[in-house]
Length: 245
Image 1 (cartoon, one colour):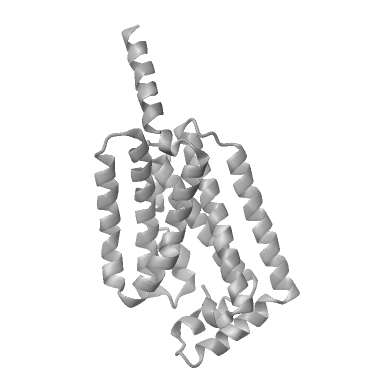
Image 2 (tube, one colour):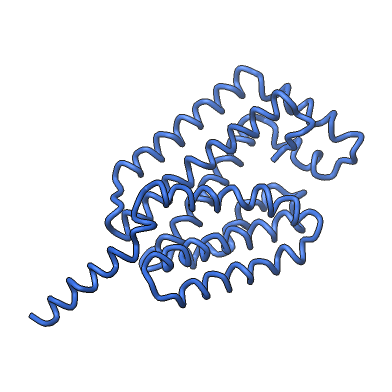
């Protein structure tokens, strides 16, 4: 009887502590923020100072540890997310800092902590694992789309081109994207991603850790889809400003 009362009391405390992140809108904002952050902060940073960007992985891990020490459910969720972000950040730094001319290595390098993330799905850290795995999935789908549309060949050219030749290559990439075949592939992949994210969302519930992990995965895929759409739009309308990836 005492154990039952303690269990119910623990659940009540967790319920109050997790109010902030027990609403889908809160999880969406956090998840989307952590997807967008590497794109607009890490990308330019790692190209200029790859070493310091790589070291920042440990700052994120430290942040996750500090937040975890608060010992409350809502901050544990944030800590778990930060742990997932650190994995994505590490893979991104390793690839874009030193291996970007070799697109075939993109996903293998980004998947550097995938074994740990898969293990994490069976633990209390499944929210962070879900963030990392869904981010990796979105990246893989983006790369496959680039390959299928035939613009993978321009990847290395853009990365290694000087400031005079890069605009010409990007213009060629833009022209390839507006072909019927390329547009058909892009639309199909976009619809597929949206369907997957919707199915994950519909199967999730905010009241459990598993449900939160599924919601995070859905939000990450949706945000990745939106960001990819923006970059594709830029590649078609203003190729000089978009870059290839």
